[in-house]
Image 1: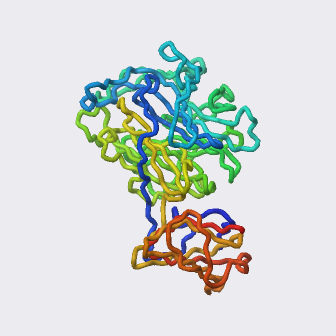
Image 2: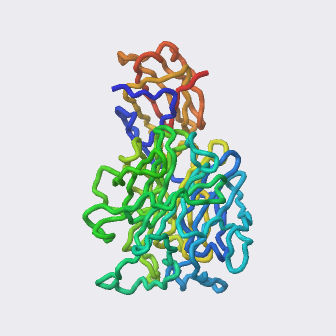
Image 3: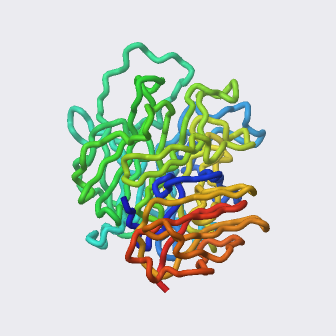
Length: 489
């Protein structure tokens, strides 16, 4: 079967394009830290900050995040002499912005009062909690709905009215055994739809819930899929036959909608194996340089591990990497951690190390991810981590060299561009094989480090090949190949 790739950028995140590899492997790359970009020290932010979302809207970078202070998370023996547990308070959604994705400010919005003052960056403090906004790319969306969001709500079982959650105000005793019989619930958990013209001022799209199949206790992620022309949402679920989460593990479910109001039934994502690890969040997004591909960066939890003996809550978290070509079946070949807790002992806690929903370009050849660090402590902050563009996974060959050959491809254009990196002694050579398997074009030896370098041909060219299936054969020597694309002049 021939894969029609047109001029779309192709990433080596899986084996979708690959027919065979000889002495080449797919290698996961780890983001590099660029330090703290936003300290979360305000009283309304609290120490149990969570669920941040980042988008690039034109020349402006925007971030939304949840601020709360819950009982019973901080390890008091790890607090410094001038530090104290942040007083408990209910949820307040806050907003920050940046002109470069590196230097962030917290504008005073004057919308919601906290401790008698509106001089803060709180943009939402309604009955819906855990808001997750996104920039709606649907061309049919009216201006007053340029931004959309979903929020978690609690509907009173007797009155049917939306009720404010008091979860963060309840004193928790995490090490106390759970009662054999749970108290009878008085509310049901639902998801609600919201809209905004500017990402700051929000209203409910309707009073009725859009989804009513909990659990939803996480960062539930919605977005507009510009390729498939519908809305998508990824929410929390449970799956598997073993584990400690309701007879299974924390998992991820997906649904789609034509209008953001009416949704298909929720379905578990499929990773090809029985779920056996807890995925607490999902951070799923269409990759901005190849939007037909979904990337997911779930916060994976080991719920029984405890690094510090006096930690009131057990569990450790890191971040993993997955990808999908259809939104339901995810390739999770890289089971190793994508982002580790690192050396800071305050990151070895149950619910820290969360990657923001959203991956954004922040410089020449660079993209940024924003990681929650030191959750549960007064030093809570967001850390910026960077990768080269398309730099999640590469096809890698060592100094002995290797070959990668693709399936038959149909393409458009007269030129080809590579995202690659070699050593000083390494190289990449591209061979284009015609429908007979014969070499129709060979590139010059390519060496260096570039994210979008045009291929120069030593023999042949692409002019007569665009109307027939071809294969690409990459000869790699001490090199990493991240992506390629065909293009017009």
